[in-house]
Image (cartoon, rainbow, N blue to C red; front, side):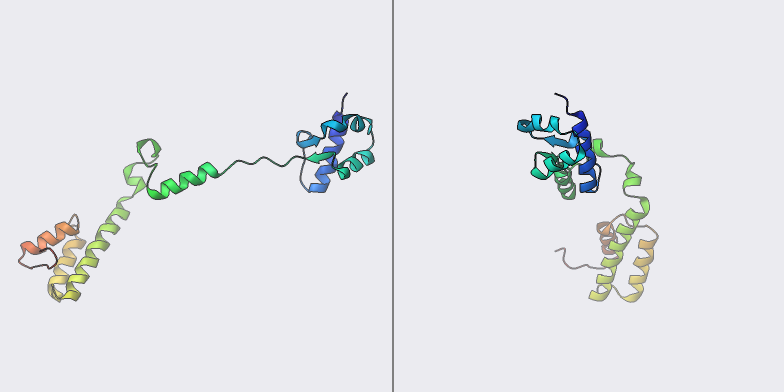
Length: 158
Protein backbone atom coordinates (compact mmCIF):
# COMPACT_ATOMS: atom_id res chain seq x y z
CA UNK A 1 0.00 0.00 0.00
CA UNK A 2 1.62 3.22 -1.18
CA UNK A 3 0.84 6.48 0.52
CA UNK A 4 3.61 8.67 -0.95
CA UNK A 5 1.13 11.03 -2.65
CA UNK A 6 -0.88 11.38 0.55
CA UNK A 7 2.32 12.07 2.50
CA UNK A 8 3.33 14.73 -0.05
CA UNK A 9 -0.09 16.40 0.05
CA UNK A 10 -0.11 16.34 3.86
CA UNK A 11 3.37 17.94 3.88
CA UNK A 12 2.20 20.83 1.69
CA UNK A 13 -0.98 21.36 3.77
CA UNK A 14 0.92 21.23 7.08
CA UNK A 15 3.55 23.63 5.69
CA UNK A 16 0.88 26.23 5.02
CA UNK A 17 -0.70 25.71 8.45
CA UNK A 18 2.59 25.84 10.40
CA UNK A 19 3.97 28.75 8.46
CA UNK A 20 7.26 26.95 7.80
CA UNK A 21 8.29 24.02 5.63
CA UNK A 22 7.22 20.54 6.72
CA UNK A 23 9.07 17.88 4.78
CA UNK A 24 7.58 14.50 3.87
CA UNK A 25 9.75 12.83 6.51
CA UNK A 26 8.23 15.00 9.25
CA UNK A 27 4.70 13.84 8.42
CA UNK A 28 3.43 11.35 10.99
CA UNK A 29 0.64 8.99 9.98
CA UNK A 30 -1.31 6.94 12.51
CA UNK A 31 -0.50 3.26 11.77
CA UNK A 32 -4.06 2.05 12.51
CA UNK A 33 -5.61 4.30 9.80
CA UNK A 34 -3.36 3.47 6.82
CA UNK A 35 -6.27 1.91 4.84
CA UNK A 36 -8.34 5.06 5.31
CA UNK A 37 -5.40 7.28 4.33
CA UNK A 38 -4.60 5.26 1.19
CA UNK A 39 -8.20 5.78 0.01
CA UNK A 40 -7.87 9.58 0.50
CA UNK A 41 -6.91 10.91 -2.92
CA UNK A 42 -7.93 14.56 -2.70
CA UNK A 43 -6.42 17.34 -0.61
CA UNK A 44 -9.77 17.90 1.08
CA UNK A 45 -9.71 14.29 2.39
CA UNK A 46 -6.18 14.82 3.75
CA UNK A 47 -7.29 18.09 5.44
CA UNK A 48 -10.09 16.19 7.21
CA UNK A 49 -7.63 13.53 8.42
CA UNK A 50 -5.30 16.25 9.72
CA UNK A 51 -8.21 17.87 11.58
CA UNK A 52 -9.08 14.47 13.11
CA UNK A 53 -5.47 14.02 14.28
CA UNK A 54 -4.74 10.97 12.14
CA UNK A 55 -1.99 12.89 10.32
CA UNK A 56 0.33 15.23 12.23
CA UNK A 57 3.63 17.06 11.79
CA UNK A 58 6.46 15.74 13.97
CA UNK A 59 8.34 18.40 16.00
CA UNK A 60 11.63 19.70 14.65
CA UNK A 61 14.65 18.04 16.22
CA UNK A 62 17.12 20.56 17.57
CA UNK A 63 20.66 20.24 18.85
CA UNK A 64 20.78 19.96 22.62
CA UNK A 65 22.74 22.74 24.36
CA UNK A 66 23.00 20.80 27.64
CA UNK A 67 26.56 19.65 27.06
CA UNK A 68 27.60 23.12 25.87
CA UNK A 69 26.13 24.74 29.00
CA UNK A 70 28.00 22.28 31.22
CA UNK A 71 31.27 23.05 29.40
CA UNK A 72 30.65 26.81 29.78
CA UNK A 73 30.18 26.39 33.54
CA UNK A 74 33.43 24.44 33.75
CA UNK A 75 35.28 27.10 31.72
CA UNK A 76 33.99 29.77 34.10
CA UNK A 77 35.63 27.79 36.93
CA UNK A 78 38.91 27.74 35.00
CA UNK A 79 38.78 24.17 33.71
CA UNK A 80 39.34 23.08 30.09
CA UNK A 81 42.26 25.42 29.51
CA UNK A 82 45.03 22.83 29.14
CA UNK A 83 47.50 22.60 26.26
CA UNK A 84 45.07 20.66 24.08
CA UNK A 85 42.41 23.40 24.27
CA UNK A 86 44.69 26.30 23.35
CA UNK A 87 44.64 27.77 19.88
CA UNK A 88 46.78 30.90 20.24
CA UNK A 89 50.24 31.62 21.60
CA UNK A 90 50.77 32.78 25.18
CA UNK A 91 51.16 36.36 23.95
CA UNK A 92 47.95 36.23 21.92
CA UNK A 93 45.92 34.78 24.78
CA UNK A 94 47.07 37.57 27.14
CA UNK A 95 48.85 40.24 25.09
CA UNK A 96 51.94 42.04 26.40
CA UNK A 97 49.96 45.23 26.81
CA UNK A 98 47.27 43.54 28.93
CA UNK A 99 49.93 41.98 31.15
CA UNK A 100 51.65 45.35 31.53
CA UNK A 101 48.37 47.11 32.33
CA UNK A 102 47.60 44.56 35.02
CA UNK A 103 51.00 44.91 36.74
CA UNK A 104 51.33 48.72 36.47
CA UNK A 105 47.81 49.36 37.74
CA UNK A 106 48.42 47.12 40.74
CA UNK A 107 51.75 48.84 41.49
CA UNK A 108 50.22 52.31 41.17
CA UNK A 109 47.36 51.30 43.46
CA UNK A 110 49.85 50.19 46.14
CA UNK A 111 51.90 53.37 45.72
CA UNK A 112 48.77 55.49 46.20
CA UNK A 113 47.93 53.53 49.36
CA UNK A 114 51.46 54.18 50.67
CA UNK A 115 51.15 57.90 49.87
CA UNK A 116 47.69 58.22 51.45
CA UNK A 117 48.76 56.18 54.47
CA UNK A 118 51.77 58.40 55.09
CA UNK A 119 54.42 55.77 54.30
CA UNK A 120 55.68 57.84 51.36
CA UNK A 121 55.77 61.63 51.01
CA UNK A 122 54.93 63.32 47.70
CA UNK A 123 58.47 63.41 46.32
CA UNK A 124 59.16 59.75 47.23
CA UNK A 125 55.83 58.75 45.70
CA UNK A 126 56.78 60.56 42.46
CA UNK A 127 60.19 58.86 42.44
CA UNK A 128 58.79 55.32 42.83
CA UNK A 129 55.93 56.12 40.45
CA UNK A 130 58.45 57.00 37.72
CA UNK A 131 60.50 53.89 38.49
CA UNK A 132 57.37 51.75 38.18
CA UNK A 133 56.49 53.46 34.91
CA UNK A 134 59.96 52.67 33.60
CA UNK A 135 59.39 48.98 34.28
CA UNK A 136 61.89 48.65 37.13
CA UNK A 137 59.64 46.34 39.17
CA UNK A 138 58.45 42.89 38.17
CA UNK A 139 55.69 42.82 40.76
CA UNK A 140 54.33 44.49 43.88
CA UNK A 141 56.55 42.30 46.05
CA UNK A 142 59.62 43.37 44.05
CA UNK A 143 58.60 47.03 44.39
CA UNK A 144 58.05 46.69 48.16
CA UNK A 145 61.46 45.03 48.55
CA UNK A 146 63.13 47.91 46.69
CA UNK A 147 61.31 50.52 48.80
CA UNK A 148 62.43 48.74 51.99
CA UNK A 149 66.02 48.58 50.70
CA UNK A 150 65.94 52.38 50.52
CA UNK A 151 65.23 52.49 54.27
CA UNK A 152 61.49 53.14 54.16
CA UNK A 153 59.64 50.83 56.55
CA UNK A 154 56.37 49.42 55.25
CA UNK A 155 53.87 48.26 57.87
CA UNK A 156 51.84 45.06 57.69
CA UNK A 157 54.70 42.63 57.06
CA UNK A 158 55.68 42.04 60.70
